[in-house]
Image 1 (cartoon, rainbow, N blue to C red):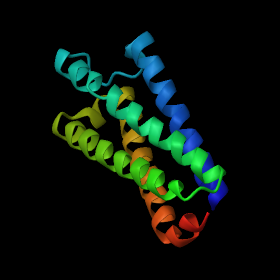
Image 2: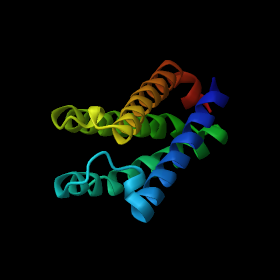
Image 3: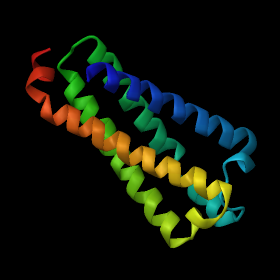
Image 4: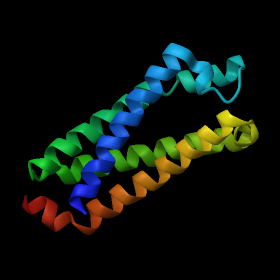
Length: 135
């Protein structure tokens, strides 16, 4: 399971970088709506996603090196993901994003992946806390 978690962390970091690279280079590829409010909402996320990416990277390093700090960084990454999931889900439901065509499908996938990733990482960290703290 440790290997799977490492791959999930690599995947999260990769998706984070890919999403924001595409968003800032050609946001029409990802945009579910083309309103100022939607762009303002999405543009509020880079710093939070950067924190998520940093937490994932530090969790990956600590987990690979079998350092006790892995528990902290895994919990930080998963809780950050759950927070972002909640913000995204609520906005998307309130604004009909999921029913807005291809962009809505992409957004629904992002929201689902964020939830599953966060719950898997959090469960892994919590159920193996003694092992993780033991190094």
